[in-house]
Length: 41
Image 1 (tube, rainbow, N blue to C red):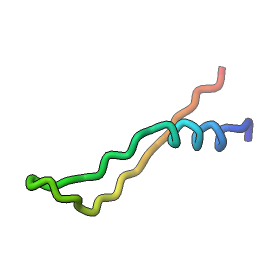
Image 2: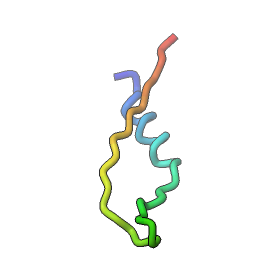
Image 3: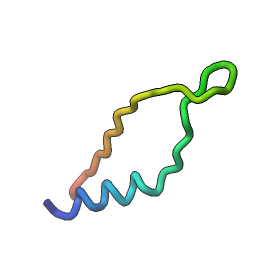
Image 4: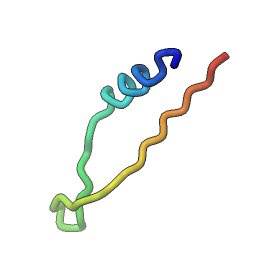
C-alpha cells in the first residue's frame, strides 16, 4: 500500500552491485538480506 513497494524497488535499483570476493580476488557465492525501512509522517 501507499506505493511503498514501488519506492523500495526504486531505491534498491539505484544501488550498485559489488560482488563478494575472497582474499585472492575471486568471486564467491554470498547471500545478503536487504531491509528497506520507511517512516510515514
